[in-house]
Length: 99
Image 1 (tube, rainbow, N blue to C red):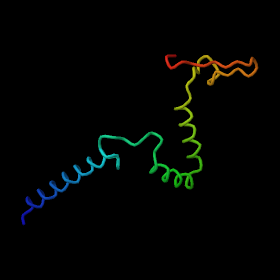
Image 2 (image 1 turned 90 degrees about the vertical axis):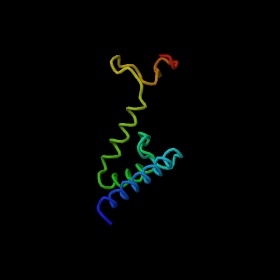
Image 3 (image 1 turned 120 degrees about the vertical axis):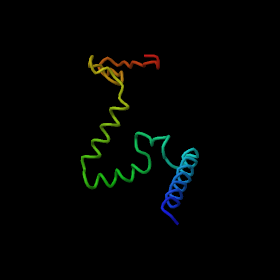
Image 4 (image 1 turned 30 degrees about the horizontal axis):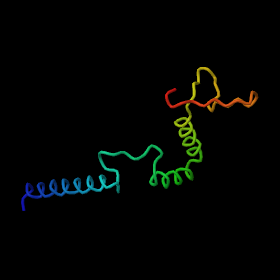
């Protein structure tokens, strides 16, 4: 066979593989082109994170700090308590989702 035929077969195989991967992505089995894995990493990042922790112990601290910064929601400019709890005064401030 000539090189053109082999090239056509390779392109066809690539397109078929891409379509199969897109189908698997729509079913939620894998992440391919359209969807990205969750920010927290999911199961694959969990396994990789454990290996990374063995090689670099500071990785866990960085990952925990990044998670804390994503979930922490407070006004850093005012120095207000991020949870809205005043232990000395015995009060709790609840914020509505519209705040």
